[in-house]
Image (cartoon, rainbow, N blue to C red; front, side):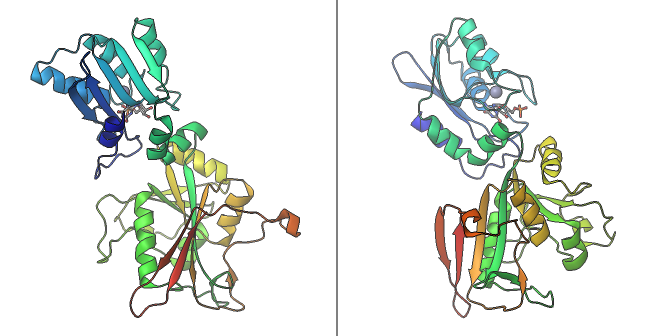
Length: 333
Ligand code: AOF
Ligand code: ZN
């Protein structure tokens, strides 16, 4: 299973909406016969990849043990059901880590048992869930995971009082932000941000070049967007979600197979998501800057007394520094 997890984690694979999955098929004496891993939506699942390799090489899988990081799927989606492929290949035993949280694909374990195959599960399940942290959350909750990103002064402001907000944090912090954006599949803002700031919302690398696999740009709100907005420049996909309900916006994005929303909207949108309980992670960049009467990063959350304060759990603190720039602190909660 450790090896299957290693295969699942193979770097550089663009997965789209799918999980990372690895598979090792062992002979009855424990030696490895074949391996496989998933390379992204539309390509073979890990089990199917391993079975295909066995067929190419003329390796007989009768009575073999398939070790998979995720419960073999039971559905025909972009590809066929792996449970049936394993049955067809004649394996005698299947050991998988994580149960499939995707209701459309789940049930493979039962199908395998019904076919008389010995099935064991749960081995290193936490490691697989960890590897697919965002995907597991999204499929379990049937909505995308939401990371709210903000950059503030030490007095909690995200813009000066006249609305100007460019470059509160250092260049190094902005490069880091782009790296995190690139890990999400959707960047979400409100119509107001597009009208006022006209951001491009693409992901650029440290040399300011756009990365190849751009997240979807999603703008939510009922107002029409100016046709000449930079989000319509064609440099990445853009969708206008005509709703102001966070849950509805996330439902629409999930229907488009979005798993991870990077929320970069203004204070109103951030507050709406918070109040709806739809912020799953907060990443804040704090710059050693004072903005005084500047604008708050988030609007009123309905918290008026200390006992109502929202307490978050810090999971990471990283100092971001570069020569000749302000030192920033990135806090993940
Ligand atoms: C994967 N890779 O190795 C396994 C998956 O419609 P599809 O073909 O893209 O199927 C996606 C679903 O299949 C996915 O959400 C998961 O529930 C299940 N198993 N998926 O992408 C794999 N074994
Ligand atoms: Zn499958």
